[in-house]
Length: 249
Image 1 (tube, helix red, strand yellow):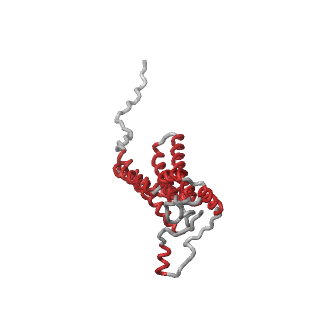
Image 2 (tube, rainbow, N blue to C red):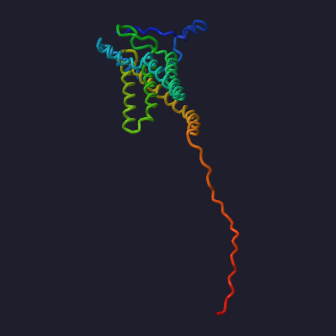
C-alpha cells in the first residue's frame, strides 16, 4: 500500500515562514500535472510487482546516477583535466554537472512534490520528487562525457553508438527510479529535459570562451610567415642605336 507522504527534506520555506511569516499551505510553485493518472497508475503497478531480486537489480542500475558515483567520476575527470591543463574542459565539467544538479535541488524545493512512496522495506530515499536527481545527474554526466568524446570519434556510426550508449544508460537509470517508486514518470522526463537543456546552455555559452582560448594557442603553434617577395620593375640605361643610313650599292 502507498505510504502517507511525509516531508523528509529540510524545507527552507518552512524555516522562512517560522521566523518571518504566517503558515502557508501551498508550495512556492504549483504546477498542474496533466499526466497525474499515468504517474499514479505506473507507480502503483510497479509497487505491486516489486520483489527482493527485482529491487536488488534496480538498485544496482540506479547507482549509475547516484551522487556518490558521479562524485567519483568527476574527481577522476578533474584530476585528468588538471594534469593535461585542459582548463576549459575542467570549467565545462564543473559548471555543467554539479551546477545543473544544484539547480535541480532548487526546482525540487520550489515544486514541493512528494514522492510516490515514502514507507516500505524498499525505501532508501528522502526529499522531494520533482525532478529526478538521479536522472538529471546521469543526463548531465554521460551527456557531457559524450560531448567530450564526440570530436575524437570520426565515423558517423561511431558517433551514433556513442550517443546511443549515453542515452541507454540515462534511460535505465530513469526506469530504475520509476520502478523503485522513488519518482513518478513525469519526474524522470523532467530530469532528462532539464539535463539536456542545461547541457545545451553550457555548450553555447562555452563557444566564445573556446575561441578565446584556442586563438592564442593556434597563433603560437603556427610558424612565422616569411615576408612576401614583390617583384619590382627595373629600368635599364641601354641606348637604342638609331637606324643606319641607307647605303648605296
